[in-house]
Image 1: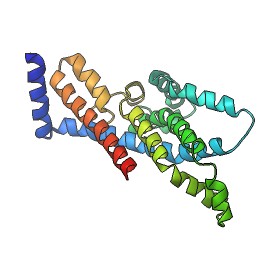
Image 2 (image 1 turned 180 degrees about the vertical axis):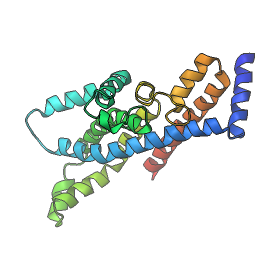
Image 3 (image 1 turned 30 degrees about the vertical axis):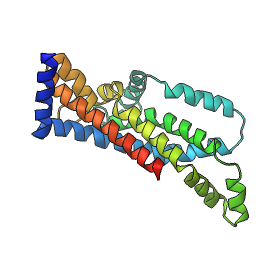
Length: 228
C-alpha cells in the first residue's frame, strides 16, 4: 500500500507542477483522438442515416459486418494500416508512417463502425412519423433528414462519445502506427505501457489519472446534454 500511496502522491505532484512531458503526451492524445472522431463523425453519421433509412439488397449483411468491425482488435487495424502506409505499401510514398496522421487514420478505422452502428440504431428507433410530417410541411428530402437527425441528436452524440472512448483508450494502433516517439507520437496509453515497463509507475499513474478524468468529463458532458 505504501508503494501505491507514494506513487499516487508523486503522480499528483507531477500533474500540479504541469510537467512538460505529461502535458505533451496528453496534448498528443487529445488532438489525435479529437481529429479522428471529427473525421469519423462527418463520414459515419450520414452513412448511418442512409443505411437506416434505405432498404437495399444485402442490408442485413452490412449490419452484420458493422457489428463485426466494432469488435475488430486494434492490433489488426494497426497491422492493416501499417501495410498500407509502409514504404512497400500503396500509400508509402506519402511518408505518413510513424506520424500523428498515421495514428489518426488508424483511429478513424476503429471509430467509424461504432459511430455508424449507433447512428443506425438511433435513426431506426426514431418516430416513423417524423419524415412524412416534415415532407407534409413542405420540407425537401435533405431538410427532412436533417430534422430527423436533430430529433435523434442525443443518440448521435452517444455514438460520437462511444467512438471517442474507443480511440482515446486504445494502444495497438498508436503503438504500431505512431511508434511511441517522445514528443511526437507518444500518447497517454502508449506512455503508460512504456513507463510502467521501465518502472516509472508514478509517471504512468499520472497519465492514467488524466485519462480517467477525460473519460469522466466526456460522460458528464453527455449526461448534461441528455438532461437538457
